[in-house]
Length: 226
Image (cartoon, rainbow, N blue to C red; front, side):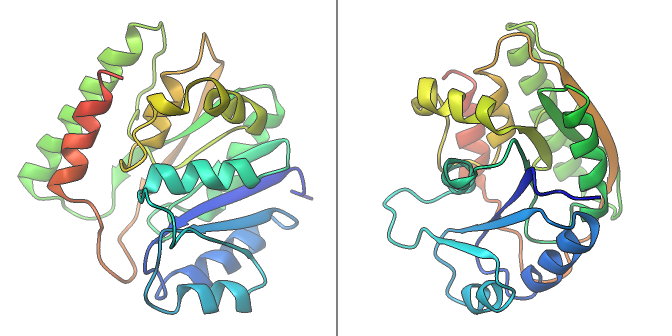
């Protein structure tokens, strides 16, 4: 099947150990899809690897505002296809689920959320509590708009590209650009969207280190009030 109606957006920061394999897997599972790697200023070989794979490298190294949400937003602005899928560059999200996400978008869903069915590794107790708290807080915030999403903090999702671009045109200032929960920021701007789900197992990071810090927790809390 051809996926030339889809752009896969990958926000990155120092993902040389993963990005080449991820691009290969995206192309294997979604042949014909456009790949935009929106990079936040990597100091490793991420750029060289992306270019060797002939994917589009969006260099954000000179941007004043850094962050995963800012990277995704800039990637969306470059997308020209009907549909878009956001996936992390660390291989914790399964590229083999992209066709399922796109299928639901083609069926008429506005947004399709990759919902974590389980986590492949055993998280520390404090991380479980943090994740659950973040999800519940996000769910309550979205319920004020009549929106229900099980995994509101998912970093793996698809949407109609024009819907996302419209949200940015109307309310980009309502997004927390330095934060990590772009899906949450996006959903806050929608009115009664048709939302689908695709279940997946949240995998182990294959290489590199996690970028999440206490600052990102604060930024997520802050975004509740935007």
